[in-house]
Image (cartoon, rainbow, N blue to C red; front, side, top):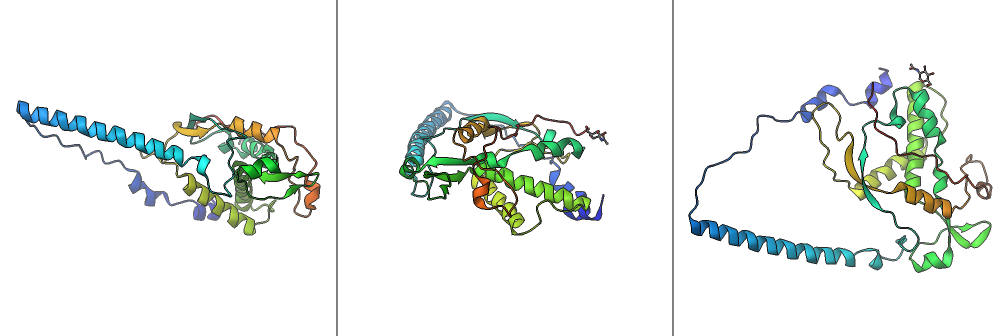
Length: 267
Ligand SMILES: *[C@@H]1O[C@H](CO)[C@@H](O)[C@H](O)[C@H]1NC(C)=O
């Protein structure tokens, strides 16, 4: 392990303690007997509690639908009229093709990804009606506004962070010179993780992994991908020295070259 890796990775010993599951702790049971009146009383109160709980959920559900995008504040870009992403249960794996030990196998997967697929051009009248904030005009069509879909922005940040990390570890020249953009990428991912606050309870058995293959509630990426394909802004990434207009007018082939990835064992 290199000096840099040692600094970047947590000390195993410090964390070991937190992972251990306390097998000594058992729930306590006590023995009790009931008279028929006590039993009837308990049944009645259970029934009442259930009724109160059920009505609470009805009210709560109702309130949630009122708070849906229908009443979203101005400046929140409502997507419903344009695209609806289904939610589905899907496993998230500890390792996939994207985290192979042998980086000559995983690097090409990351390098192939086209985050610029997430630039869309939308009819300005239609999106104004849905509260979308102002954005730059498409150079070739002032009737359209250009937007970058957040998930593709995140992927763009992840790619830069990963590439820069391994180049630093390997002592190679930087493709993306570390600058304020890197700080932005770490921070935008931090804010999004907190914003989406995924509370999936990950199982763990103290082997320094958690939740391998466990089901999560996931949005359907294919539907997001297809929305971006259908509304492409025909934007390509290039060097920072390019003029902005030179990024436009080049359409990709309708593919973001991202796959979900399937579970892998590390050995
Ligand atoms: C890593 O993968 C490449 C490409 O598949 C292969 O040529 C190479 O032998 C692998 N290296 C190791 C150490 O397994």
